[in-house]
Length: 281
Ligand SMILES: [Zn+2]
Ligand SMILES: [Zn+2]
Image 1 (tube, helix red, strand yellow):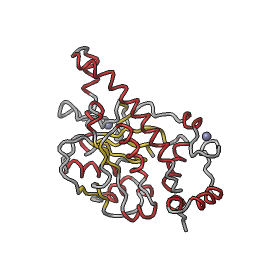
Image 2 (cartoon, helix red, strand yellow):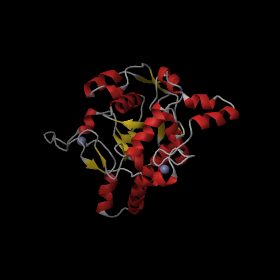
Image 3 (tube, protein in one colour):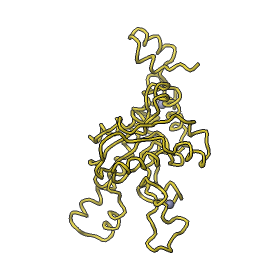
Image 4 (cartoon, helix red, strand yellow):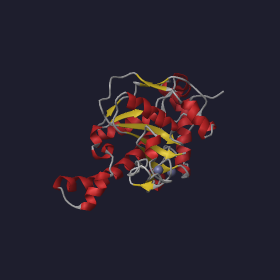
């Protein structure tokens, strides 16, 4: 039997919390220091992903967009037009899963029910977004002044999601009710709340619904992932009126889950839809 420590902790009195902390002490996942899930020193060691890429063909770019459609109809190459296959515009990936601390933190958050780690991983997402927005800031004044060909080229490739960051709607990838009951919280929602709060963005954590509880995606290959996730989501909110959406999840693998969410959001009137995740699994 799996004991959900987090939900026990949330539902018990202070005196019981004291005993639970004795049995399950809080220790840094990196160095074992007590009182932190991820201490300041270890957090500083986590490296952000230096470059983004098209999730489909892995060609590097600035903002994780899928490769745009080729200019000429016969221009399809290995790394051309990946975007046409997806409903999603791209995925921002904050860190590398092969960093031991990142994979440990994500696993502890999801499978050991340590919701406190969402604070640290949320902080990491914010550091990463700050860095992307820093790039946008270089471009914006140039645009206003209407100068410089280099800045113009940069701005042309910059998603509106980044350029007009404060207009985004943040939506966490939902869990099914069954999985939510099992875990006691949706890790993607905890991360989304952190990000939305930090930047003062609108958050909708209730209108994107996951209908079916299927097999966990982690156990399936790419073809079966697509089949497993198909038609699992629906949107019960009002029309999104071209609003750009940042979809938040802990990990992306093939992008099948994010893409299914994006398909539903686009049908509901969303503009750009980008994923924002802690790492690529
Ligand atoms: Zn540490
Ligand atoms: Zn591509």
